Each structure stands twice: as structure tokens, then as C-alpha cells.
Image (cartoon, rainbow, N blue to C red; front, side, top):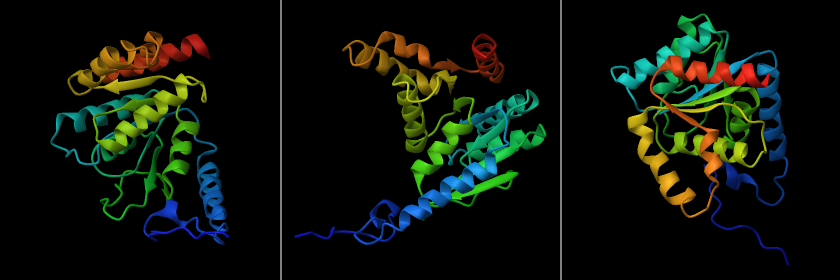
Length: 225
């Protein structure tokens, strides 16, 4: 005898997969199709992640804007999550550099409105589809300071590179003061207890200047293209 799932809440998309509702898979397929159709001609791009809560007067806002503008002038499109905070800063920097500015927006009940600096805006219901778009079209990943979403994006990208599920691309953490404690913990706990290889630390870089981030990315592709 089959049992119907309990505690299903309509506000949580992952719980929409109840018996008889497999048609929702077409909605997921539709999100993939829209993303690929919108971005197929994007060209070289950098994905920039960061907090939605950091305001324009913060130093990290200016540094994110400067970083995006620098990559934009170097010929990269800029991809963000399309929200406020550092995502807005990155899209704003791309716009200033006349680079293509992309926002991959997620529908959340509590999130603030998308920013207004996007040339291409795509909305997603499912985080995992959105993440595929970041990974498929980003030739580099710049991780600015942020909260749980930013940490998730860093560790998932780190894991996929480490396990060779995606091609290796430059992965850059911006802000020694912010990320230094986490990097020390990775070294002192994960590496020391042999939970990861010491060589895994070479899969990402920590920087404090936009120019350093760009040089890491450009150097990587000079060696590997």
C-alpha cells in the first residue's frame, strides 16, 4: 500500500513533488530551457556572489562594484543573483563598464526586490536550476563576503571542482579579514585531520584587491586555454 507524504507545505517548492504531480518536472525543464536560451550567447563571464544585506556605504560595496567594473572592462560579462546588496554592486559595476549585466533571481517570500542594473534578468523557483546556470556560464567565481547563501555557493562550487564534476575554474575569495578565519579552520581541521587533501587548498585564492582577482583569472586562462 502506497503512503502519501505528510507535512507537505505549498510554499516550499521541493515539497511540490507529491504523488500524481510529476508534471512539475516540466516546470523545472522550462527553467533550464529559459536559462540556456537567454545565456547561450553570453561569452566569457564571471559569477560574483555576495551578501544581499550590505549597503552602498560599506567598503565591500565599493570593492564589489570596482571588481565587476574591472572584469567588465577586461571583456567579461557579470553574473549575479540579481538581488540587492553586493549583487547590486556587481551589476552596477558591470553597467558602468558597458559590460553585459546578468541577474539570476530566485523567488523568495522574504527577499527584497531585484536590483535595477541588469540587462538580462531570469527568475527561478528552484535553487538547483539557478546554480547550474552560474556554473555553466561562469568562467570564474568571485566570492565576496556574505551569509548562508554565499557560503553555500562557495562550498558547492569548491566541492564540484574538488570532485572533478565540473572543469576547474578560478575560485576567488575576496577579503582576507572576512574569509581568513574560515580558511584557517579548513587548514587546521579539515586538512589536519586528513578530511581533505592539502592540495585542495590550491583550488581557491584569497585576495584583497580587484586587480589581484583579475590577474588570477587571466593568468589561469593564459596557462590553460
